[in-house]
Amino acid sequence: MKRNRHFLKIISNNNGAALLMVLIVISLIMFFSTVIMNSILTQGKQNQIIAEDYRAVHLAELGTDFTEMKLTEYVDEKDFETAGKAIYFHNLFKMLSEEAADFTVDDDYPERKFLVSKDDRKNSSYEMTDDGANLFLKVTGVDDETEKDIYVTYRLRFATSGGSLDDVDDWGSVSNEFPSPPENPDYDCSENLNGCKAEEGETVYIGEDGATIKNNELTTGDFYSDGKINVDSNAKLTILGLGVFNEMYIDGNPHTQVLIRDHAYFEGQLVSKSNKHAAFNVCGSARFKQGVDYLSQFGVRQHLISDEPAYFDKVTVSVGGDALFKQGIFFHKNKGSLQVGGDITIHVNQDPQKYFNSISNRLRVVGDLTIHGNGKTIVNPSRLQIIDQLKKPSFASVCANYPLPETGGSGDGDTGVDLVDGEY
Image (cartoon, rainbow, N blue to C red; front, top):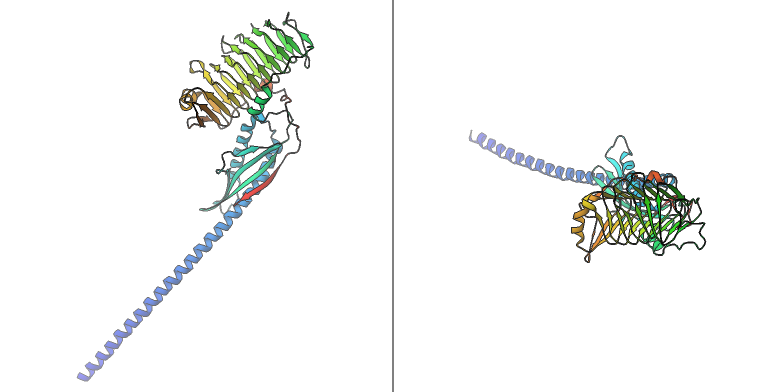
């Protein structure tokens, strides 16, 4: 009996050792299985990341081709005018963003796409060239949570008429010296402006005594005046050429209108103080050496420069290109507004932020707002209302049938887009 118990004890001890061995083996198998599975999962995850990176890069490359195609369509279909370049590029960027968002790469994988935006590394998203512009974009390929960027530069070539001023600096150079009156004008209307009738291409001259237009419609070619011009009581003055003035006073009667088809040069001040109804429109650019004090409808299709303070009131002042105010812009009784299709630059003799706070709700701009004052400069303050798309200014319909004035530029009918550079 003792021997049996001893045998059973041996067997029991062996079973315990065997069980321990089995447990050790199972633990080792589980350990190595876990290691192997982790390795497999890690490798699989890395393969997935590599695949997503690869797809994201190719999605970005697809986006660059797509962007070039859309840019080509845009420059072919949209006429470029430098006076409205800010609107042109604003609409261009908006188009690219919307077209990319609407494009479906793969119906089965909606998370795979590309995005088009401005190059956020640069201060400006475009720069003008002799015959077009360089455009700086960022195309982002997106595959689920993986994103890859390509920074691209496109070369845009525009078909221009040869009559454009690239920016307000160009207009400043052109308008520093006013055109001289012709030695032999077609009409010297100093004695009787109301009886003066001139057709397009014919020049009109007014002497130092000035003249008054009253209850009459007067159409002229180029118009030169060394004296003060009064446009009074329902008068309508249409200048089918450029206008060179000393000063002008416009009566506020609703039917009083002045239209200058080309550029306007004012050595003296432009004034209208009666009410908001009289209309003054320039279909080219305008230079006011002595500033503006104008409370009625006012519009300039291209660029505007005021060397002295500019005062407006009650209405929306529209400038299609850039606006430069060398001594500030002010709104009587804090009424009225300024909408500009390009850039606004203002110089003042005070702190620029304080000045901006006083007029911030008066300004609408497509381009940049820059204010200089007391040795400081601010650009695009946060409260500025940069509008999504500047509607056609109120004077646009008046100028619609007139071409831009021929000032500089050779013109080029070759439009196109080239991919110049790409940086991953």
